[in-house]
Length: 346
Ligand SMILES: *Cc1c(COP(=O)(O)O)cnc(C)c1O
Image 1 (cartoon, rainbow, N blue to C red):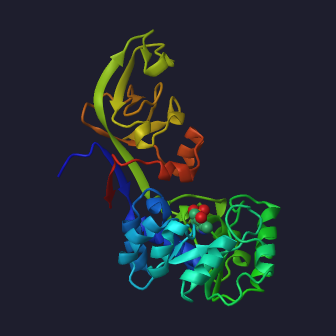
Image 2: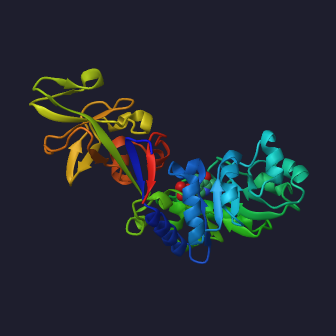
Image 3: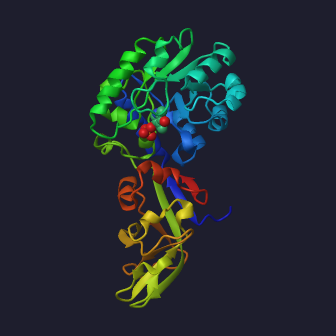
């Protein structure tokens, strides 16, 4: 096997445990899984296979390329394509086992012509002004006669205690009551945490499956899924007054022992971790020193005299603390991880 000098350790049991926790919090509603963006960077096929085995029957991707990759793995489970389709996708959408989520009046009209009466999903805008039909679109009778499997909307502020959550919930319930559909769905991960009013018939968690903590309610129940390891390329010592890395942003006040890791912003370890991130070795925290560069990051290893070239350290990639260090969201932290990591399922 080729050597991968970077490693994501992905805990398959924690992934399944997180889905079960979200399914339990979803009460009588079915609990699905958002696996868009390659399963939030982790590996959509591996994620979907494990969740399917655990009992998940509803999957969500953004695009038809994502759908085509996953559909053969999903058996008779349901797969929805959140962006609906463009004219260029219509041919494959019309024959796919996946359902488009219709977002615009044009998508609805095209689906009437091309869909042959097959079921679709429909996104309603309840105040986010991102994707979805407006109440005015619906009032024109646009949806009359369509076979709608899932009617959905999406929360803008589910991760906050905002009045907007209840407003969106009420708007969605009111509008959905006028439209025949087999199921209604509003909640993402944060929405599940908001409680029974938000659950409807189907939930669509993403980030919490992968160990993200969207709200305090999830903190005890959601387990860590992803760990990140990097290998030491070189160990060195900088004398007092010497500086480290691009733009010499760090100058040693006293002699400092350094280890240079084969991890950089091209691997998703973005520059916001410069002088703010840290690595772990046998319980010791090893701070990032100076700028993160494209393929390399330097840490201080003063307290770990035995660490040598070729040894591995764990990067502090706990999503909550890494978000605080870097200024990135938990979503960005997962989806920016690049292709140079071996993805090792444990
Ligand atoms: C991405 C997405 C989800 C999942 O959201 P999380 O916040 O990751 O749980 C659910 N629904 C829609 C429409 C989405 O785009």
